[in-house]
Each structure stands twice: as structure tokens, then as C-alpha cells.
Image (cartoon, rainbow over all chains, first blue to last red; front, side, top):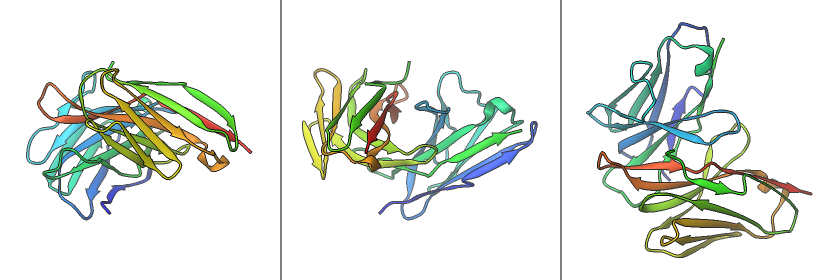
Length: 117
Length: 114
């Protein structure tokens, strides 16, 4: 089956540093990847839609300069949290849609728990 | 708000009972999916139902979709303690950008008591 690998699964960083999270589709090509953020005991909020070879589309209220998204290939998208602060601590999840297939499921990574101290 | 809504927000039942969760959404959709999430873990895909389908089954799961009411329900029959988790619906909706994106509901926290 289609597998999306997200790395790292957990990361602790100091305030002011930047953290990069990778999202890879292991056995399929993904034209579109999505990045979500989840606060404790809350639902997943879509942050941005990442399309291969073009700029990401950010949801309203999401800071583009703080959450840098790069989708350099059909199997890799990265989310960089720049100048992280404790309020950025959260669970970040990516998902990927199979290239050329719209009416199908999105495959999700296992998530990255970011803690900023 | 970008999110759909689910009810109930929390549900506590005895093992063996059925659990029903509802999801309402706002826009036209391509498909709708249900996911499960154990505390602090990633998402597990349960079932996908397309906009032209009305009902789907998978093991102890039954999902219905009513596009006229913009709502879906997830029924878990003969629940087990291991079903304790949060359940989310996600709708695949057309955004103003012209692409489809998944929007999650607020989730239902299910607790099955042994």
C-alpha cells in the first residue's frame, strides 16, 4: 500500500532555532502534499497545500515566512518552522495524494511532535 | 471556519454497544473519509466514501453519506475497549484555488468502557 514517511517523529528544539520536517511518499508520486497542525485534543488544521514545483498555498492566518514549505520533487515535501517559539509546539502531520488520482484517499504520515523549549 | 463539525464531541459507551458519530460539512465534496487517532499518535485511515455513494461497510464499520444534507455518519458496531480513540471526518472539497484539499471535522472522542 501507499506509505508516507514523516521524519523526525519527535523533535525538541530551543527557542529561536529552526526545525525541518520531512514528508516522503515512499512508493508513489505525490503531486500534492498537505501540511496540518494539531493542538492537544483538537482537530487537524490545514496549514498549506504543497504542489510539486510551485509555491505552496497557505491557509488564512498561517504565516508564510514562519512555516516555509518546499516541494522539490514528486516524493518529498519539507516544512521548516523558522525561529521557533514555544507557541509553535504542536503535532504536525503531512499527507499526500497520489499523482493523477483525485477521487481517492489521502495517505498520512505518522506525524511529528515538535516541542520548543 | 474551515472545519466541519462532528457530534457528539465526546461519547462514552459500554463494550458491546454501538457507537454513532456524525459529521456535517459546508461545501460540495469529492469524497469523505473517516480517520481514527489514538492519543498522541498519527492518523489511521478507516474508510472512504465517494460523493456518489450513500453507504459503505468495512468490518464493524458502517458509513453513510447524505450529500443533500451535507452530512455523514460513522457507526461502529459491537464496540470494544480497543476502539477507544478520537474519530475525525475529512472532506475532500474544492478550494477557491481550483485544487482539492482535505478539511477535518472537529472530531469525536470515543471511550469504550470494558
